[in-house]
Length: 200
Image 1 (cartoon, rainbow, N blue to C red):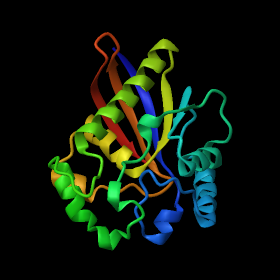
Image 2 (tube, rainbow, N blue to C red):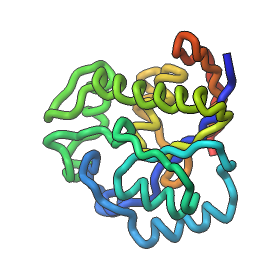
Image 3 (tube, one colour):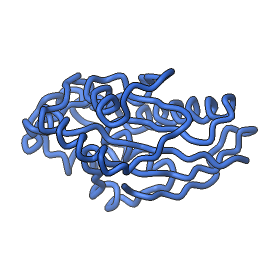
């Protein structure tokens, strides 16, 4: 067993956030105010330095990573941590998409509008987490940072500490913020056995 510190950061305020539209696999970037907000967050030093660094390969996460953390040697970009694929709802207005209904059904593993289903999404996020934790074990690293997306981070929390449906539907982490997890990892059986979370 080993304890690994995971720092999880949501990307900054994006063009989709500004337009009140859904962007899962739509590869948009941050807004100028979003970048400026990240610069303020950086000055507060909310996130500790870590041994390893990982990032979703999408524009909005790459820009967030560079703004908050600078250039890091050997940063690994993992497709497993791309945002949820919203299918026919990509770039739809929030209000028109009826997100409360969408995620209520999604929690119960019912899908609509060709949105990536919860089972497939959970499997790829779990595969990504296992890859990170295996890298920490192989490199004898005690900590890592991951910059990703809102739905990705919610699903990670749900894997660590299963959320009730109400908690799942009310989940929110502000742009440029996240959480720090203490993860107890059984490297022999490739299992997460315990986590504790601190939101930042």
